[in-house]
Amino acid sequence: MARTALRRLLLTLSLLGSLSVLPAQAGSLVWALHGPHSTLYLAGSVHLLPTQDAQLPPAFLHAYADSARLVMELDLGKVDATATADWMQQHGMLGRGESLRSVVGAQRYARLTAAATPLGLPVQLLDTQAPWVVGLELAEVEYAHLGFDPQQGVEEQLVRRAQADGKPTAGLETLQEELGGLEALSREDQLRLLDQALDELNDAPEEEMHEVLAAWRQGDVPKLAQLLAREYADFPNLYRTLVSVRNERWLPQLKRLLDSPQNTLVVVGALHLVGAGGLLELLRRDGFEPQPVP
Picture 1 (cartoon, rainbow, N blue to C red):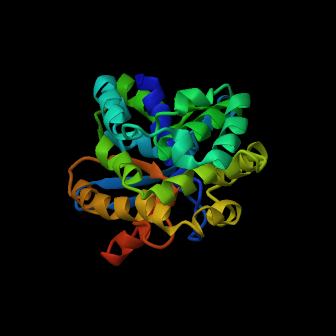
Picture 2 (picture 1 turned 90 degrees about the horizontal axis):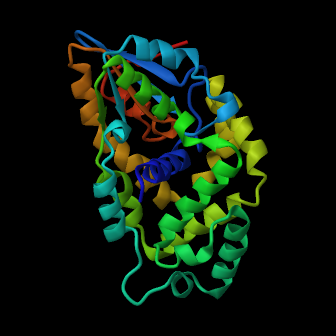
């Protein structure tokens, strides 16, 4: 898998976790936490943006300008294409003797074929891939058809700025941690993820995505919740895999960054900030007072 293809896969994964927001405070998706000697900016991202509407909100630009380094879920500035291709070959493929048709069943396979073909995604190319990978690839191709460009996503823009400015970048997790939870989903839950991707292809995604973007730009978390909270209502295992477990794993790292002498911008999917078990709630629980950045 090429480096660009991997980034799109990861960004699509993050999109699934960033645009399905549970109710929380409104007004901003960038928050500041003050440590003994520095400020930690915590920003809720939309990881894919349309080419014609790719400008970063002012709060993101302010937080970036005031920070000495950029931290993301995965360090997109240091993606190793060869290592990633090897990982996907080992972890994203079906077992020996299995085929996608045999795993998903004839009815779902026919539905998948009908959905993938108009997108220019020959279903034969998917036949050796695990259902969770196929679900992500469907979402990635659909967003591309709708004009959402991974190269114009929030993290990609910030990585390019950081590289041009000589600012270091880092990640909160490894590729194994980023995707390993999806690999570990039961076969039943992997099929549910695939079904979710297929359902979304039929739900007028373009109109909904532009509503989501408008709410994100306004920092209108309740509106985001109204639009997309249903994504995880009937799929708690996916919420736990994509959000809860990772938040708990990231929390100690955020606390260490707060002890740093340098300001840091941390960018994660917006769902990671809010709702039950969100990073803002976890930080408040431990005595921190996040302040919204206008």
